[in-house]
Length: 618
Image 1 (cartoon, helix red, strand yellow):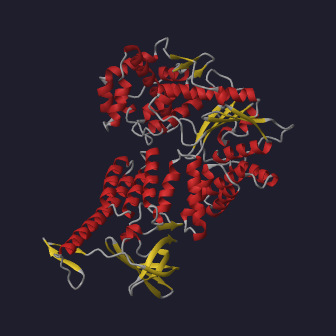
Image 2: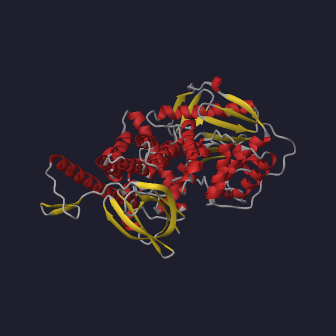
Image 3: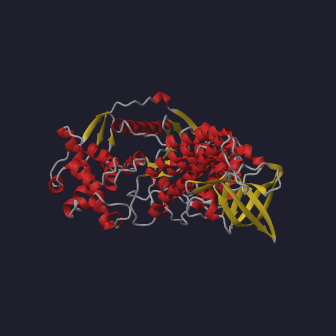
């Protein structure tokens, strides 16, 4: 997706800059939408915050319908010079002869960082930041083809925020020279390039792809402005309506051969137009809050950036130093938790986040990760309250973070309580991230727990529109099939109950409804009533038999067989531990022969034990 590597998976032995000759003065300036941390003076830090707020204001005016603020805050690390910058930049750029960066935008699922050098040179020293900021704004526009996404990022990376005006779309000298010296891709090819295309991945072709994407975007934007047309908007509308990229281009832009000729002429002209915007923005500098940071506080920010930037050894060394000096440093525990989580050490990660929560962390991510990692396994009864409290705290601290709502919906659903609240939590997650398929399927699962099979069907059918891969489609269709079976069982039960009330129902000695119209239907089993305390048993699941929604199975352990039953397996909480599933779990097909830890209770009757929860493991 991105022209420049931002979050590299390359680990190295590079070390931090030598020990400081004298203590540095660090300052934090918090504006409405950014947090600037700098080792320059407060005046410079405020200037950086002002620049970024103005940049945001520019994009807000350019994209009034876009949600331009991410769910997680953007933290700007503004360092004084090249030495401080190199102590933090990706390892790959430290080698001799590598591209010299002036700034970078690092974005992950839960963090957004900008690293910038205050004494950088050049006409557009922060073009990388603007390029990736554009990608961040367009990240939810999954209908957008790659050329348009990269073309817009290239176009806006040449934004220049001056004292009294903003220049947008200044020409890219490098792209113009490259296109004049090389043959452009046919537009029919450009429009169909995707992430698997060699034109995107191979460096010699990738450069042409980026340059031509910029040129076409620049040409269309200028033409739309000069001729009072809206071809780019028309094109985007057609794409959102599922029209293929080439057909949409022909309908919006006209004859593609003529467009190719016009584009060739465009890159060979002597002058290029760009847009100027008044520099007055809606930035209220009086709302900026500044505070001095201690060295340990600043080191904690730097260590977290290094952790997310995958300079693991440097991050670990700095975090060890911080915790040696201050064992109760909340931020350091959070960053340690992230490092452990990324390395797959879930127990250590949970303990680190638990310590941060205990220290009254005000970071929504610490609460979310503690709860999410805890939910990855079987949550001990003693921990359930803290897990729920942390999810609610995460939502309170950041109401714009969808995963916390989704996790709370899952937590409540697995415990079959407050199901209406669970449904609302799931809907909140969907509202925040409308294209997230898993959120929508989770809402359907909650509806099944509420015995609203038809509503769950409708949700899944709508969710299918957001499937992006064949695996996504298969997962949704599998859940839809099982939901349809469940809804049919509900309808059979409803009809039979109505017949019972009317005195017209007939039941055979075997407990089945007599055959009618060439089909037979089983009387849906009643939910068994557990009796006495819950127990745990580890073994292998055998003889899985489904009569939707009921399920019977055996658990074999050390030569002993325990019979288990549930009247509705859609209500049964499943979890996995160190097991990878290829898709959503289908209990009727996937449990046979699996090792599992089963929570169960004795039945109030004389039948099999009541299964309460199943955890699959290796």
